[in-house]
Image (cartoon, rainbow, N blue to C red):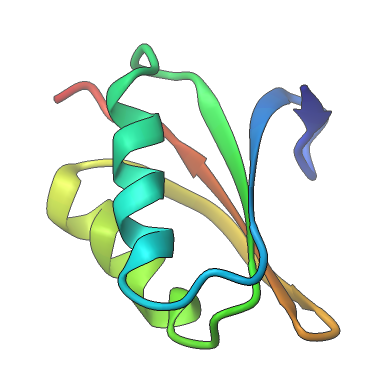
Amino acid sequence: MAMGDDGVAARELDLVGLNCPLPAMKTRRALARMRPGERLLVRASDPLAAIDLPHLCAEDGHVLIGLVREGAVIVVEIERGGA
């Protein structure tokens, strides 16, 4: 487990090298296996992940904690919603 920006432990999902639609699909699948309130830290290199993952959060009722770019890698922290 990794620590998010606010020090809360988060599971990690490394999706570097995968292209659309795989980052969104694998993120959705990982979130479905988590409990509400748990956090997921996703690393992806597909530029569309910066659009797709926030959209996935809004669509599925999850909370987008943060999104940053680290070079060519997009790091997204998501809190699993209650749905």
